[in-house]
Image 1 (cartoon, one colour):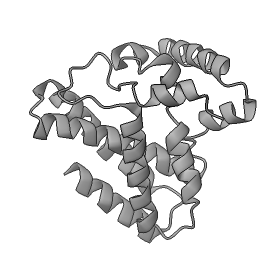
Image 2: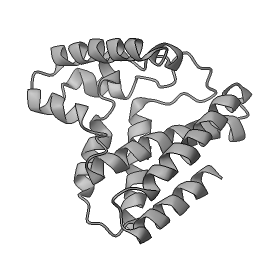
Image 3: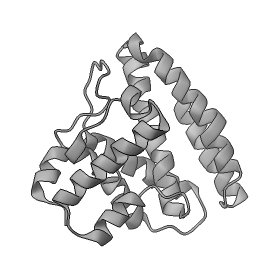
Length: 186
């Protein structure tokens, strides 16, 4: 069970800390948009998926941010050791709020690419982030994020798309998902 305090923090915890945004985004907004993306993904692929499991994974994947906030990217990804230390500290904070070990494990595995549902959630997480940056740059004219947007677009094109093409999805599913993602980033 998610403690009420964390539920409240989900809707007030902002993302992109340390970055100037014209329009703030909360973790709740991020999660809802991910759910909607996953709904679209599910209509494009032929494989049988558990859409409820996908929604659940979307909802819990950033629950750690309700206790630690969104750690600014330059700090979080400064080095692998820093990233690991931040993840460990966040897990400790989350364990203080959530005592259920099974639930904590589910949070850890929410974006696990070894399951189809986790794989789609991990893709939705990246695509939603790109879409937020794209809105800031191209609709709200926030040129501060322009280079981050271009870097993230490259990440999607050169890492996410090739991973889809080598995934266990059926050929038609890989093609449809790739076309959809490309339509979102072009």
